Amino acid sequence: MTNLEFVRRQVSANLPEDRNIRASVLLLCAILLGGGMSVCIRFLGDDFSPVQIVFVRSCVILSVLLPLLMRTGLSILKTDRPLMILTRAASGFVGQIFGVLAIINLPLAEAQALGFTRAFMVALLSLVFLHEAITRLRWFAIIMGFAGVIIIAQPQTGLNSFALFALASAFCFSINTILVKILVATHSRQTLMTHAAFFQCLFASIPTFFVFQMPQSSDWIWFVLMGVIALCVQPLSLAAYRIGEVSRLAPVDFTRLITATLIGFCVFQEVPSFMFWLGAVLIVGANLIVMSQKDPQ
Image (cartoon, rainbow, N blue to C red; front, side, top):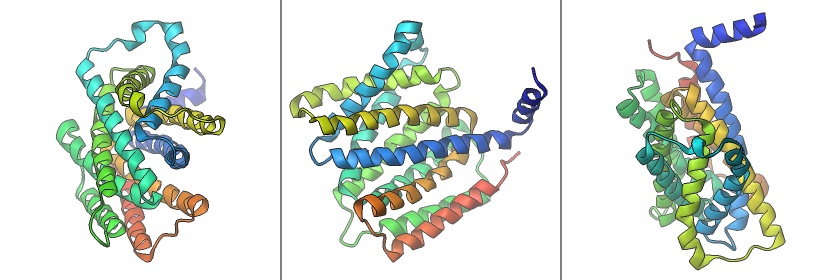
């Protein structure tokens, strides 16, 4: 072992804060790539149903993972928690359907702002199920960020159904995140990705049969690109939640707001309002507060 490798391992072993920083960087990379997926979904949403989008996305991921299955055999699919695996796949599938509906029908910034409720749901669920400590200052930051979300998503004429879809998607993915945190302790990233892709493809296959439309050549480019991005996002997210605290990583999701705002403005000419920027300041401020605090002893 080289001296550099020895030092790296000692730092990782002795400084829990370092693990949260590295996990935050991994999750941030996943978020940046996820912005590209939103663009693919928005372009595909004009011609294809959400279930077909999810179905093709899952098929692309599964086809890329097949060579791994051929090399390792079915042993990679073994699990001692089949119900938890199935629940994660189901929550991810439903969350994707609701999420696609929100992305297609809402401004990207608003869809992401409503999706930020997942961060608060995850933090609270991690307190209940994972017993991760949340300091008073973090509670203040969570409340501050939630206030920012409310300001951004404040409806003019009542909460529409697509906003409800975004909230439902956030709830499904908060459950998914908690399950991932538990499963990564005993399952490899490849196992979790394969199970998720297989079951989500299975769940989507039946409704897709009734609404399927044959993509044109240009459509396949968007479908494949979406699948490739998803294939990159999943291992980055799984690695982040393997080494970091759920309650500490949840506020990192606030950076999705910046990504969604830039994409919405540059690609779809969606101009945020003054209230959006006011809410964004609160959310970013909450993120900075949480990230500056050390974990409780």
